[in-house]
Length: 197
Image 1 (spheres, one colour):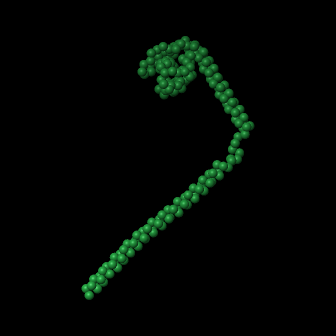
Image 2 (cartoon, helix red, strand yellow):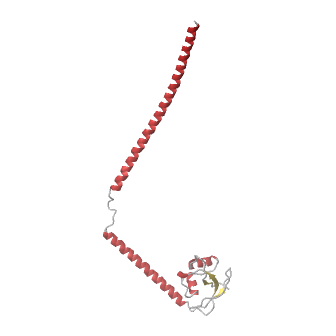
Image 3 (cartoon, one colour):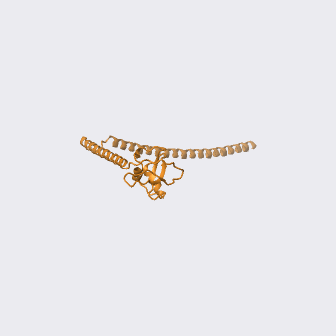
């Protein structure tokens, strides 16, 4: 009887172990099924994205291969445009020549001598050359040394900001022969100031 009970006990134990293994195996199978479903959903999503991209590529390919209607210029259009460009360039050249002639005339009209006063770090009133168009009285103003990036307009504005009422034309008049297109660093120019004492 002991043997039968022992066998019965072994059999019961084996059945319990088998059921436990079946439950663990079932859990693993369920887990794998879930992972397979996730992978399947991911593949479906990627297939949809590939299909969308294929549609977009086809649409873009069609647009590239379709010739544009009325987007090209005719030979007459190009000739008209070339004529307009030449006309604009001629006007620009005429304006340039006129400006150079006026600057040259200003240089001839203001035949006074360039001042030769020393400049200090802060502008101090000095007397400049005489102006042939006005009375033979020395001008009063400031010596200025040209710095890198200076233009007559920026120099005049800087002095106006300091309270000196001066224009670029007055600077050109006070500096006969001065070419505003050839200001070089270190060049001394005279800035007239009618209000200087």
